[in-house]
Length: 216
Ligand SMILES: Cc1cc2nc3c(=O)[nH]c(=O)nc-3n(C[C@H](O)[C@H](O)[C@H](O)COP(=O)(O)O)c2cc1C
Image (tube, rainbow, N blue to C red):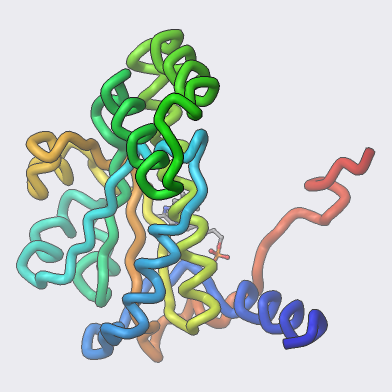
């Protein structure tokens, strides 16, 4: 694919996508498309590569229906095909770091000792941070995954709505997330727009580029 085609189709996809308010609940994301979106989540870059998050993928209609009232009654939750909750890990500890270092060593087939510099750096970051700072840091990493997912979905012409309008403690309770060592931070509804969603035709509202960019 030439750069020109790639550039125009990426811009086209990003312009096509919008925060979908009404999904066609009859249309479901196919398993093969979902596998691509799952890869986009999996391949998300994170600080140090520590991946301090979990993705909860809700397709069960009764769970989506239970989640709707605790997500500001937003219809997207029950209408969408896949509702993804982005959760931050409740704890990032020196053990978390050690496990990750062992994983790098195993995958890249290098001795754990050769990763000492990285290991020490990550340990310094974790032990030098308060639990609150680590929680905020982990949540920020989860948002990167959200961005990746929305872009990947747009390229596949899969509609989506990012959602901060959730009551995180209630979402945690319904999905039993504490027991799984994580807390919800944000969500994304994915599927296909309903023909009657009037938001699909609205012009994008973005500040002029000179207000958003500082060129040095
Ligand atoms: C982190 C985040 C949280 C959002 N939360 C909600 C939400 O709870 N409900 C909703 O309808 N839209 C939500 N939005 C959608 C934004 O309002 C929308 O992306 C923005 O107005 C730009 O419009 P566009 O996405 O259609 O281009 C959210 C967007 C982001 C990025």
